[in-house]
Amino acid sequence: MGTPHISAAENAFAPTVLMPGDPQRARHIAENFLDDAEIVTNVRSMSGFTGIWQGMPISVMASGMGVPSAAIYITELVRHYGVTRLIRVGTAGVYRPDLALRQIVAADRVVTNSRLPDIIGAAAPLLPSASLLDAARSVANGNGTDLLSGPVFTSDVFYEPDNSERDAHTADGVLCVEMETAALYAIAQVEGVEALTLLTMTDHLVTGEHLSADDRRLTVDAMLSLALDTAVAASS
Image 1 (cartoon, rainbow, N blue to C red):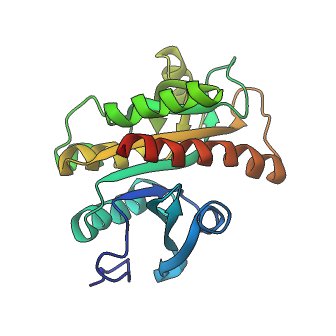
Image 2: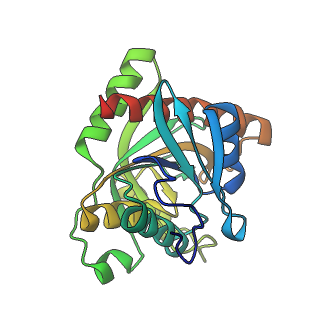
């Protein structure tokens, strides 16, 4: 079958896909969480895998960084491989002063400076699947995971010229900034599939704190477990 960016065979992807931005994190999920994981695509070193979690087939596909890259992989997964549920598992920079590093956030709304949602005809507000968000909250409550829900900002600019964007969004209650969720929620809305973003806070843009590489890995693993269990709960 294949697409310009995914070389997987037909039916190589499970209906549910976890999407980290980093291809190395995709491999980490496959090798450390999934049973019987097999690589199904690796075009441009953007790795995709399919395996089993608690008896359920689940795939992992890296999205790359930013709205344009994520939009390519999300669209091709949905249109060409029949994927119906996507869970972004990413990291973010903290906007809210009292929000701690390591906090896991479920994006219950996304605002953005990207034009992609308007271009593809997605209507505001850009929201996750209610069933996926409810499943994540239920799983977190059941296993004691500290999960915070709130709005996030998807930015097309990593190196902002000043703090005006951050200050404006913080005043509006936005918790953090990342670079892909607007693509996920907009495309999911237009294509009629389910989507949710889970984020681990790894960089504090107010205090200047950052997690070390080891801390990032261990902290992100808690989010990955939550995402996988959420996928199972949502499908049952």
